[in-house]
Image (cartoon, rainbow, N blue to C red; front, top):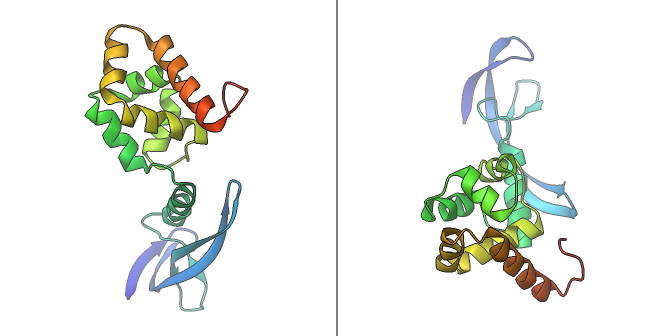
Length: 161
């Protein structure tokens, strides 16, 4: 497919040909993740990232990392929060993470840590208890219980990964 784009780097409109390339990428501790990235090739053969969505290939890399690690997707995390009828600030505070971190995770601008993913999963599995504990204003007990479950699962001696 050919498409005309304005290239701000060249300060002009040109036609580009769509190209999909399999590539190996590194994200955090995972090397050699296989991703099919999206590019636009100019008349000279130079590849350019998506002009309409410059972060597209980064998001593809994040998705490959989450899949490899078995992490929840940003959409699943957002849906969990919405199912709980909580704002970003409320949900983040109840989990002991910053609202800016949660926003970045939900918007796919950041990958959650293993600990954060485990928190999300435990809340997902225990939604009713989570809401009850919060209704009783017992956030500390809830977080302590979550940390104990995580510690037990990973047999950790420290409180967080």
